Amino acid sequence: MNFRAEIDIMPHKELLDPQGKAVKHGLNKLKFSTVEDVRVGKHITLKLSAAGKEEAAAQVENACRQLLANPIMESYRFEIFEE
Image (cartoon, rainbow, N blue to C red):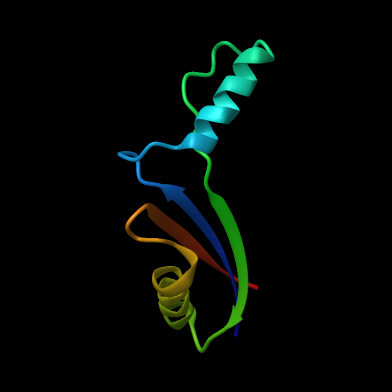
């Protein structure tokens, strides 16, 4: 079966996010003064084959832990969709 994984990876809330701070500063300069905070992360779409949704989720979990996310600095969540 074919699946699509939509993965969101974000810096831990406890860590400073310099890219988010820069975006917030830029937005404020453009008169978006109501923006209180910005956090910048990554969104990754994977297309994969697996016997079922549980196997696909296990593959994505392993990919996130081993390569896609840095567990020291980032958290992640994902959804699996059948294609």
